[in-house]
Length: 105
Image (cartoon, rainbow, N blue to C red; front, side, top):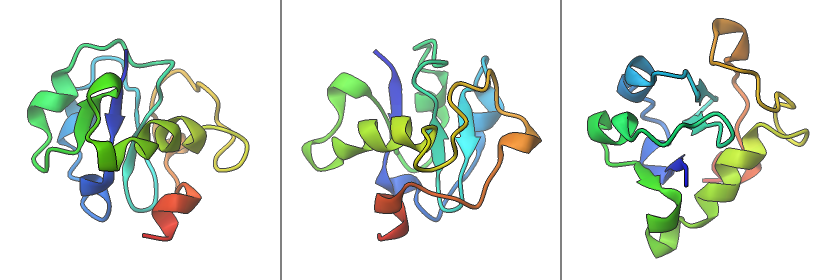
């Protein structure tokens, strides 16, 4: 299980989740934040502070948000950032890029 950031985050990027994440697995894209699924330790702290209810457990995604599990994972792949699992969000891992499905929203 991992946590997934979904569409309510688009154009909001509040950042409260970034501040509380104990492993720094939440990264900043152009229009939204993304959770690196291989780095997430499933603690759920991010879920408790999200002001727009954009974060869900991967197995509990609302039906109209299921594509965001892939969107979060693919953000780190070669088609978007190519970061893989960088080992923790840092200023050098901030970008104006977004997954193509987020760009089109």
